[in-house]
Length: 321
Image (tube, rainbow, N blue to C red; front, side):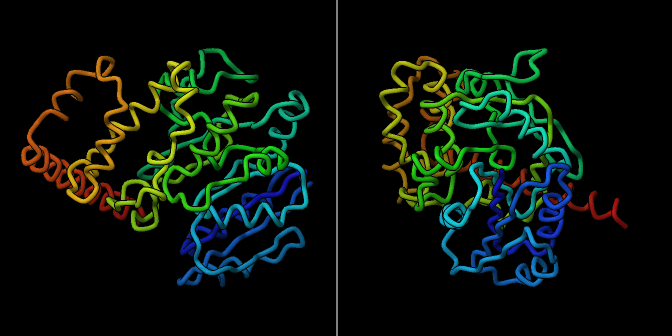
């Protein structure tokens, strides 16, 4: 029924928990494919300690998460694909309830459930813009996304028919940031999206920043960043106000690129696509400030953010000891 793909890169401290959360599922018709993406720590050794006939571990040269997931799907034997990152985990009934969702809505192009955001050791239900009282069924993906800008489809809590994944040619191999948004939006604009409003997965944001794509202050090349590769959405954006709203909010996040002399023109190209009449006064003022003032403000915000993160780390360490 299900093939679960786990890309693995330098997650030795977490990989066993991820795999074991799959092996502990109440629904047993599945296989687990771990793609070790050239880890240089002892991730492979940790994963290899788990022995189960449903588990397969493949090692490849470091190629990035998109290629790792795509290669995992190529090896998949079953018609439905789920993804789980090596530092996240599932509730025991995730596959069972996903199976029931598929039984009830067999013609959907993608299925998702709600999830917990794990931050500073605390679990918070993701504030997805689902209407109050909604339990399960088909959703308007862009409408729901636009309400809170919290991902309705998060990679660790989705299931996609392999036929649909293959039809879309999977994750774009060059993308290293936003590769999941890119694929889910491609599917959502063509197919039905079915959602179960019940948190069944855990999105771990307490991982070392060096191993997270978001928030590590790294600059991505144009072919690696999803925002520089969304021209195909232009026709849909013109007729879908919710999609336009979502993309404009994403474009506003390009401030670090705008402040970087080498990346400024790339950022400007995207910022020019924004409908500024619909943006807040704050956003408009920020992007009209002189560059040198913006840089000073950005440095101060980063500095204060680092202080806050260090304080939270110390609190977590004290709790453990």
